[in-house]
Length: 329
Image (cartoon, rainbow, N blue to C red):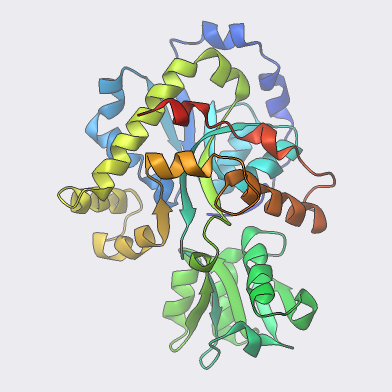
């Protein structure tokens, strides 16, 4: 799921310069929203199947993508909004496609993992050893946090740049002592290497990786009432997932979207902290820590600049707007 934007298209720029009046003229058109394979976003399948958007009086067109392709489509001006991590919203904006995150779906709560070969159960055991990770991507940041927690530096290990979807094979080959990856790659690694163990996960850094709905600023300005309806449908969905009476049905619907069994999907959902309305309101409050999306994004912005993902720091405050969330009851 998590990655930085690969394709630096400027096609979005022309779309962004459309006036709010132009967007208003298209108000009869459905809101085009990109989503991809991450539990906090797969959850939209529930209201889509239940017909809740129609009940709410808002016309939407959810388009399924591979994650990076969804950001490319957004940057090309083909979508009103897409789902990204807070860090990837900064990356996308740095290429000329700014956005406003109006909804925080969740934060990763264990799905991003550092996994060691059999016998490796702590980050300290990796001193002088190799870690396979997609350098410059979010789990590189997770590795840095793990090293910091153990009083170590990046120079204490050797990072081997490995595409995230290839980390299970690299761990199995024995080329590295550990890998860092997100689901489903992390789960595949645990399965493919008997005795391997996830000894540090995003559950140890709650709020390091937020996932949300980022909207074209012009669309947000012109169709704010429609976006408010979308948010109301989302929190109806969250309630459906959290209700013990309907939880199983929610998991069944989500699992069917990605063609796995509900039993296999349940752990993926548990590794994703889907935020309630009150929790999202708290995360939208400005603060320096990871419990604030602003504090979290400042950490990611510093990481992105240090690792030359982009050259200049982004104005973090410009990427997030919790006013619609705050207005909900």
